[in-house]
Length: 101
Image (cartoon, rainbow, N blue to C red):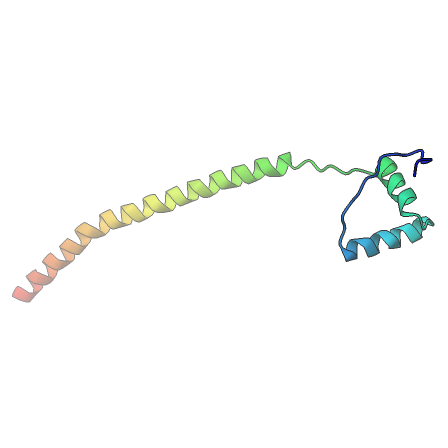
């Protein structure tokens, strides 16, 4: 170990399924040395970064629309309740008038 050119050791915990996938990819690359494979992939491997800012903005807009719809429904229910109170009183009054005749 004293003669190694690379003195820093990196350690990565993996599951059994991940280990099997790594070994399969190592075979595809044609190497049986994990250190060589890991070094190659860590240095030359692709990093894919996905920009979700548009999706986050659309989600925020959808939440605002949902809030507006909830406010409209709540206002509608309040108005229906306000209309139904006088109609209920009127219905009771008309029933009492019909019973007299």
